Image (cartoon, rainbow, N blue to C red; front, side, top):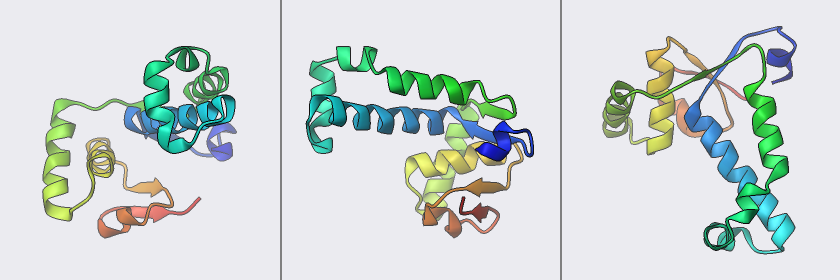
Length: 130
């Protein structure tokens, strides 16, 4: 991310990735503030929505990501979704991973930075471990 932020390279992500980040950050911040287990965080947040509204660390980080100059954030179209279903059926990837691949394909992106080894199943994708 530092290389993207500094303008050394251009980066791309999708709303799905940002949504996953928000979810994980919300869980982490809630576990810390409410002193609960990660396993109970989702049900806790549903019954205590003010923790979501008041998650200042989460919202600050999300704003920082959205404001990175050299980072393009892609949306997901109905065609992307349909293609992700095909990818799931062919590769056995889980739904979000298949959506990532479909979004990459739709936007002519062939490299992903991730520690998730499941992407190595897709021969046309180059996987970089950050």
